[in-house]
Image 1 (cartoon, rainbow, N blue to C red):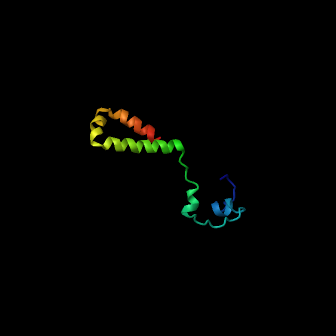
Image 2 (cartoon, rainbow, N blue to C red):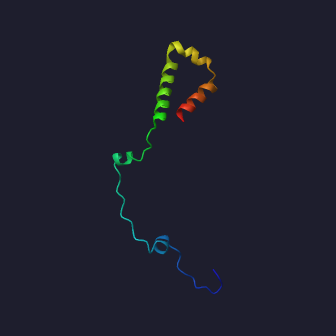
Image 3 (tube, rainbow, N blue to C red):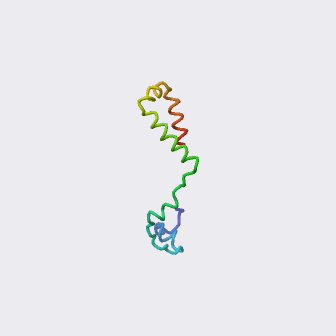
Length: 86
């Protein structure tokens, strides 16, 4: 404050800043069906990648292919998994 200023009341956000703004109507909660339209839609490419990842995980778990999976370096397995999850 400058010398000689008259002290004023403290600033209040609701009374000073929002004084001229009309109050909003109370928000109504949205149902799960209404919220679902805001979810990102899966693209055909993403669906294909997801299916391919599931197939690779299944094949890798088979006893016949388990040994083959162990011979593939882990960094390559991680790269393929990350690519399929992107």
